[in-house]
Length: 191
Image 1 (tube, rainbow, N blue to C red):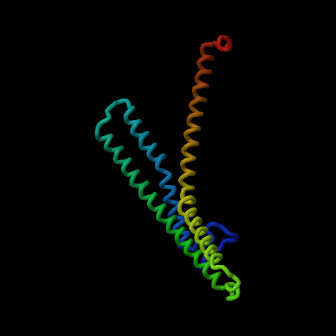
Image 2 (cartoon, rainbow, N blue to C red):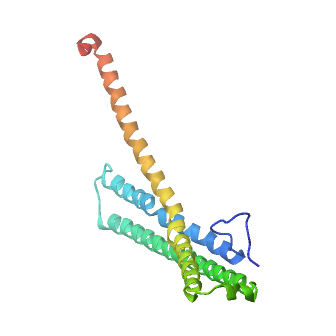
Image 3 (tube, one colour):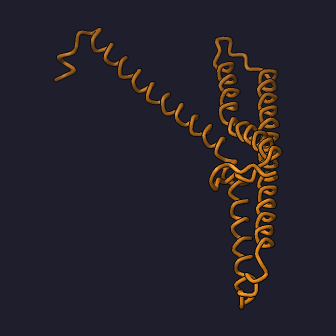
């Protein structure tokens, strides 16, 4: 019934439906993380059209790029919705399965086990602790794990921007060296 991967993994109670929800949730998370790169691509096209030689930036061009930004927003909104629904539903299903497993383990105990429990507060503490732990696991699955794919894409965009900046600096340095060399001014520059 429940897929139990070796050890106590976070998703060890995931079944086939949960794995399908995880797949769709991950795809939604990736789509959500694509917001910045897609918008930058659209806006770069608008800037290219604006900076073109004919300098005719009409309302049709503005409408074209506004429509593309609208489509991007709709796509990101749908992706974010799918991400949250799938990950939250998967977390709820696994938390419910954990509670059932806890109940089964309690019911497997012999009657003597409960006779040894003199204070009812200790039973309440165990139930309270299990409920708190299951809720923490549910929050982790629904809120923290689902953000990993979108955060990886954001980091990739940041790395690409950093490489672009360093590439620009290197290009300026090489251009300056070429300028100095072309004027045969190496000695004067060193001085």
